Image (cartoon, rainbow, N blue to C red; front, side, top):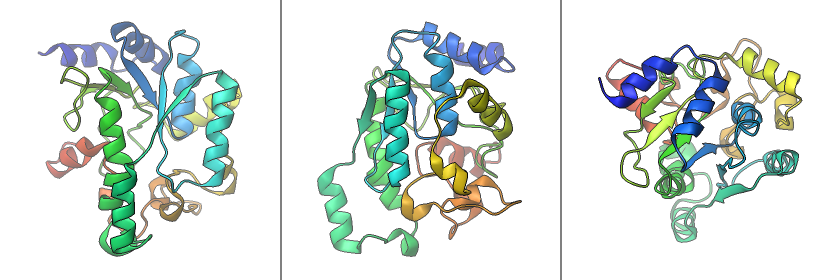
Length: 244
């Protein structure tokens, strides 16, 4: 059994706070990936555990105004610096010039997400040894249902090659996340009050109806089991072989 497999065995079933505490104690070059409600829950927990909390976020240039307001609210509420990552300007310009602003509706979101999300994330992760995400197992049909609380990230490389990914909320439900947000009075994106559950870029996100799964509001024109932007590409690989 590998070291990470042993750690997974030890932490599986532990509380998100206990998983966060173990992650922060184990790695110095570690950061929380921040974009939504789950990530705020993690920031709320983590800022009480360490005075060297690092948080980064991907600014794709296509986010809702409310999301930018949310970012600033979180920055001020916790007194933290958010390390924003931006896409390569030339790559964005080339894509838009060649295919227009909404090519993803015609040929899928992969190319745009690759430029605006995956490449900036790859650059960031190459400066880290581990990262922390807000993934939950019940978050997406077919791609996240077996997300472990800790894993080797096979899709990206870290500062010294091997990269570890922690998913402290893997065992939590959406209700548990929101119960925690309300109890702790943590900030949240005001789009949630308008029916948005899973929030990404403005052209690719819409509210969901009662009874719809939260990920149905993302890339609704595409196959449900492929609703990943590439940030968690390992989920798609695993789902293709029947293990996620």
